[in-house]
Picture 1 (cartoon, rainbow, N blue to C red):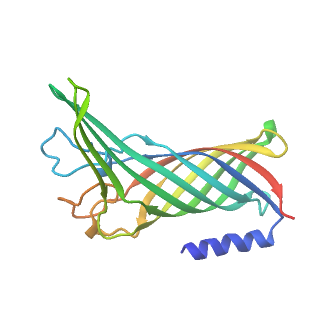
Picture 2 (cartoon, rainbow, N blue to C red):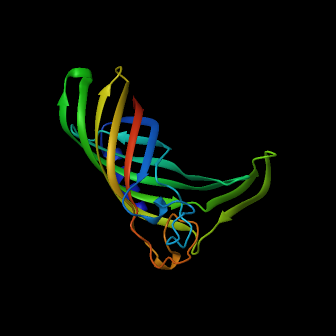
Picture 3 (spheres, rainbow, N blue to C red):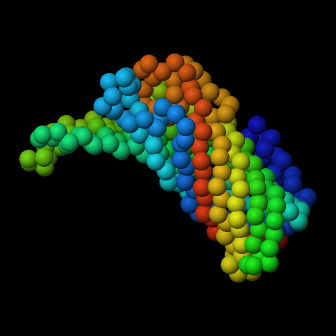
Length: 242
């Protein structure tokens, strides 16, 4: 699927006008719904029998994209995005502070197809929609448990572990739909702001692994869908291919 997407993009680039837009910027991801990765790492609720990931908030990331306007209202391209998931938690006891941290990195290769719905003269702005088939690689998790003596300010116990839930490696196919607003800053520079909704693991789920983004398999019998909201702020430079 990845080879087909890249082949399609390269074929379009070869036949279209020699103008491309190279951009980069911030790309955040927010897990939504009831995916178990959003639960606390350790819950005070005794009904939670396995470790969560604590990925309940907005997760930061970065993206690079190469776009090509192959028609008046159409763009096609490729993009690479990396999201840094981090869950943090702290427990305050009488003489101890317990700190928990769980991290994972998701690296995504996306094929981009966009259509301009509306153009307006102010700053040569435009509104567009797009669809992104995405291929994601999920790293091993990194779990840190630390106890700190509050009276002496020293670490009493520390557990630093790389988590590898079988089977490895972990790759998933997903799909994201976006809408956005763009405009020119100068003749060669322009910006875009987008928001989208999709699923990280639309295809390729493996129930024997358990959940996709949690540390351990204990009590996990399937792999739930991981719906995400994605937001990006990007800056692009337009240039011609010789």
